[in-house]
Length: 112
Length: 114
Image (cartoon, rainbow over the protein chains, first blue to last red):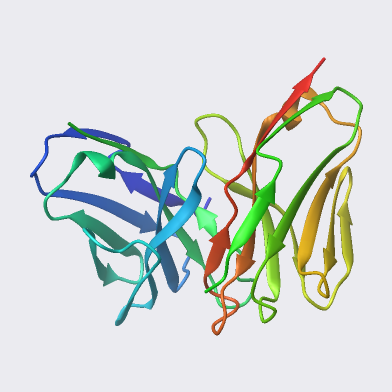
């Protein structure tokens, strides 16, 4: 079945380290998103990309960067991780017809 | 920008009773309103959505209503079952590209007790 996958699923790192979270999809969707989930705050949009050459900041982009390497791949980087970036990170995809967003399994990131 | 408020934050119901979750949005140009269910340790999954040209939509035991004038929409779950226990998120599309980006509510933890 077509799916959205994320690697790694869990990561523990230290303050100041550079971290990359990867997202791949086999759904053939053009649009990809990165969200952060914190308890009581819902899902907040970090970055989104509507095609390979399109990158846009979301609600909380400070401290993050992204790369859209191909239609199927969208990576999120934390250049210098800090403890308040400890959260659950989700990648999502959507097509331009139904607009429904499909989420990956999530990456739990802990910054010590 | 778009702001979505969701209430209540927690909801406990007896099995077989109904559950109602309400969301309000701020931007009258929003036109797509999905609802997601997230079970413990799982990814959010779409359970139902409604577009601004429709007032109500049903799918078996779940229904969503939309009041564009008041800018609020609600999720109704009837005959609740233990497997309905989860966190539910509402969302609204973010203009001007209304169909691409979503603003999510903070979520409602629903607990169905047997």
